[in-house]
Amino acid sequence: MQTIGRRALGGMAAGLAVLAAPGVLRAQGGTIKLGFTAALTGPFNEFGEGIRRGAEIAVEECNKAGGIRGRMAELAEVLDDQLVPDRAVQNLRRILDNKEIVGLMCPSGSGPTLAIADMAQADGRPFINPQAQTPAIVYPNGVDKPPRPNLFSISIGNLAESEKLGLALAGFSRIGVVHESTGYGVTGADLVRKAILARKPGARVTLESYNQRAQDMTAQLVRVQRAGAEAMLVIGLGADFAVIRRNMSRLNMNLALFGAAGAVTVPYIEGAGDLVAGTRAVNHAAFGRRPMHAEAQKFVDLYRAKHGTDRWYGPDAANPLVSLAGTVGSGYDCINLLLDAIRRSGGTSPAEMIAALDQTKDFAGATIPAVSFTPQNHVALKVEDLGTYEMLKRGDRVVLELRD
Image (cartoon, rainbow, N blue to C red; front, side, top):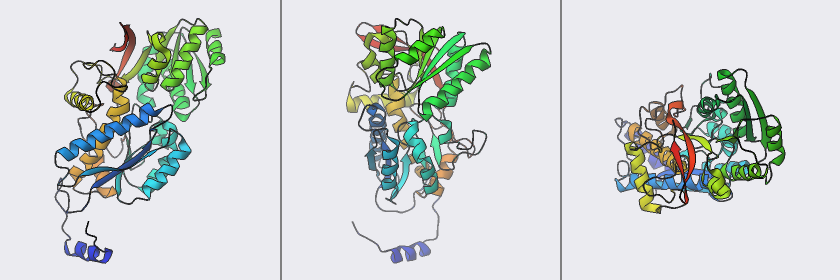
């Protein structure tokens, strides 16, 4: 590839002081480079590996269509942090050292994303969050204050999820909430408790926390049991939820069981087996509706053509797992939003891309049918984008059926 010196580039820029019209990418060489760090391996790799697969499909589709004004897209930096915050920080430092990277996805999970959020804001390049749920990621000073100017989110945030869960749990008077001790779990539990009490002031809500990857939660469950809980909510990831469900079975705990979006994933189904039947959970409504909206169906077809009915998709070709939305579909949507910002702005500078993202209106996503952002609102998902599902055993398969 021909190399042009900085001085020559400076002279060229001075001589071509004409900005392209909106939607026309100014003449530049090379690929459009994107990057991220995520949990590609380890016990929670369904999230990081999932968003990587979605990102790859988005890039492939962009390039099949000729790229953006002839420039191809590229996932130039994709690093593995195993959902460990310190590794995410180290990885992001390396990625940000590559000045050719023009847009990024946040890591998978609230812990790693909170760890890199200040660094990301200081850098200034646009980031889009596919999965992390804690409100402070986008709104570090409170949701009534301005968002981080360069950080946007399409994830199932704690605020929307807690409202939906509050509605689902409002019919119970005594509720146990068992949550992981991360920022995601602690914030989620507090918001759900407030949502329940807002609808049922006399309800008794018992909070119990656990550490990620713990292999026994008997003590927490016994305390929930002694509190006389009629229903229990788990706010955590699927592998841990499976441990909790097996512990419940040994204690003969028979109560209405709910999971947050991060809990009801493949590791829960694999780890708890038939015990998952009857579990209810909040997740993207788009993948439970039939017919699916056009962009969701397009994404599902693309994924199945590339990967088949695998662990992320599920065994039923006509009905992909609902969790495919939050694991793979969110990565697909994040990359498409970054590419759409470049397409509309005509450039790849942080200012141009952020300005375009701030003007996003009803972008057709796979996970959210209409994604919109404004300078004041950098969170796309709304309560109405969520559905409540029940896990049922049908023959040798576990299916999630949309209830509302």
